[in-house]
Amino acid sequence: MALKKKPVTGMNDILPREMEIRDYLIGLIKETYKTYGFQSMETPCVEHIENLCSKQGGDNEKLIFKIMKRGQKLRIDEAKEENDLADSGLRYDLTVPLARYYANHANELPSPFKALQIGNVWRADRPQKGRFRQFMQCDIDILGEAGILSEIELILATTAMLGKLDFRNFTVCINDRNILKSMAAYSGFKEEDYDEVFIILDKMDKIGKDGVRAELLELGYPTESVDSYLGLFDEISPDVSGIRYLKEKLGDYLSDETAEGMELIISSVDTAKECDFRLKFDPTLVRGQSYYTGTIFEVTMDDFGGSVAGGGRYDKMIGKFTGQDTPACGFSIGFERIVMLLLENGFEVPKKGIRKAYLLEKKLSRDGILKVLSLAKADRETGKQVLIVNMKKNKKFQKEQLTAEGYEEIIDCYADSVGEM
Image (cartoon, rainbow, N blue to C red; front, side):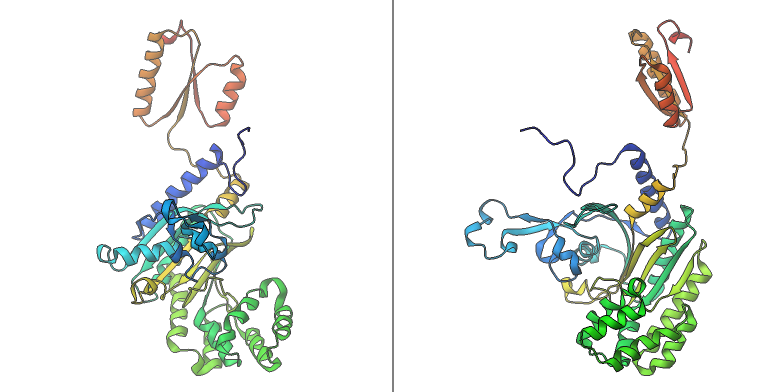
């Protein structure tokens, strides 16, 4: 049987041009986030199946690549369901592994702990353009800090990084799960119905208010509640005055702590931001992960029809490992989406040092080769990037290729001239 040269469905080979951008982006991310005090850490790509199936990952838990038990632990005849055959799986995000990591190492880590994690995750999703089953995620999280300083720092660090890539037309949308719940309670919805109501509300930008109303009524929710709920959105402006309006309108349904915290986040970020972007209070922002407990945020770009970053507060997750709740908040950039945008925009990685190539004639002597190696060593010590390669028959085409790859100096090394170099 012939071996297959194409990657597994949903996986992707990365060519040097893209890899150069990915390496540069990872370096820029680490450099930027470390100036905000974030520390690099890493978790294994394989997690316990119990952790991955803990009902914290929403629909992602349906997309786990599960790993079968091995040896004597694998008892196929006794298995009653799929999970009886698996004891672990590939991580589908970086947040659940981070929570386990912190629960295991809290005594060895500073408090608060500002974590930076970059790594691949896997989801058995349906492959499509720009969506693969293996992809890179990049998260920053602050664990052990209950105050809104976490949200402010996360937004400032993420937007500073995007600004360094010359992204300008982007918007940071911000909301709070407690505001969502307050608006639903004020309108008369039952608490057990909140998640279903919010899933439909999350479609507002696609189907509009009329579409949301139709879907809520179709599910049997009272017309009075639906109209009261959607009527709230008519008067909300996308800034701090919108939050003040809601506090006045909702009264005791919305706590002073939530409203004042949201105002302070928005005003602080507006004052301290390092690049130009829009900050928008968006009461329709929901975000799908069930583990969010407070502030949620998302970054959208005018040049891209969707979000390129998102996150929020998840104060209950670590407590499921330790029995004691720990405040936690995180922001994840869509690494793959940003790489795609950079490629589409013809982004060029800033040059570091001159690129130089030596083309060796095939009949070059041993002494000639040693001479070139010595010259290349000296060049590298001065910071140049040096390529040594055999000369091809079509030298003109070879030089054109090297020039296209960014080589500024190309030296022909012939047997009768290498000693003069």
